[in-house]
Length: 151
Image 1: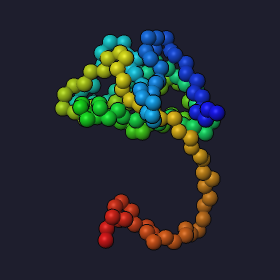
Image 2: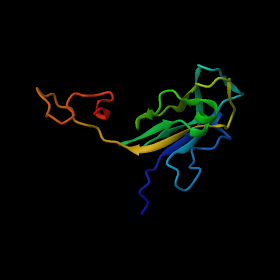
Image 3: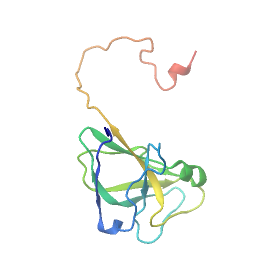
């Protein structure tokens, strides 16, 4: 029995010749996404750009896609996903794009077919929100922003 969700992928005209999302290893959680750019795109230090992937998709109900950075790009070049993780909702049908930012010291070149990010497909639940006059008490209470690490 296969419990993997089915994600329908539509390759867009400018995505011809670009691999669809794929898992590079047997146990990879993230599917690699490739750049569907025409010509090189230079991202200067401190600059961010939207990089298209050349595909749109239909996720099953109650699933999302999370777009996350590639660790090698982050370590070697200071390149990351600006809104990490980016969320793609199940009802979105437009092209998947990745907002890359250059935190490095050198310009970074994105070329057609480069692996630019990874995509995680994950289930989610939607909560029912109820307004109440008071919340239940806990040992932590209202302490936040590092308060649990204090003695």
